[in-house]
Length: 204
Picture 1 (cartoon, rainbow, N blue to C red):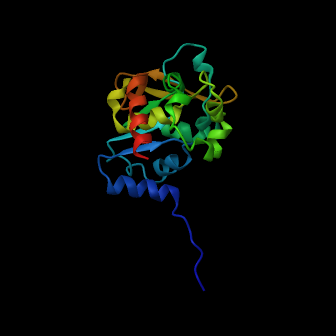
Picture 2 (picture 1 turned 30 degrees about the vertical axis):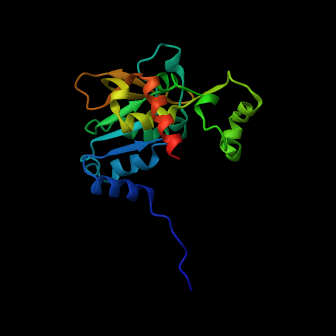
């Protein structure tokens, strides 16, 4: 009788990555539930990483932007609070105020094959095949991934994220702090990120 296949525990995968890749970069593109678990269960497990890049929150943008709530925080605000309080970890926050600067356009996509991807159809990218050129969609995760690959594509300031739980939905906002190990993105080089995208799609 074959044993059922079991996926490894996500928190164990994070711990294993940190253990096996000292100085490495951990990229977090979803809710911070598993990252928070690791921090709670073993506060020293991640200290050997070079950086932890997180797509989430809103940095030092204008007042209107700071009222926004990102999906990752909304899904688990308690986990976001745990991560935000992990003051000694080398966290790089890439917030909505910065990542929204990049819009994925139809011309940024491969010239063929996009109709095969359900997720892209959901975003309306099939309009490209009908000659619609003005459409674009924000690419928050793409910007964070580019930062993880090369942090020269983003400007940052030291600070921390604070969870606004007194509003609904809860959201993270940047708070300046010169002595913080965390850094919060303030601007991104959109052309450099588009260059990453061009190389990725041409090699796929």
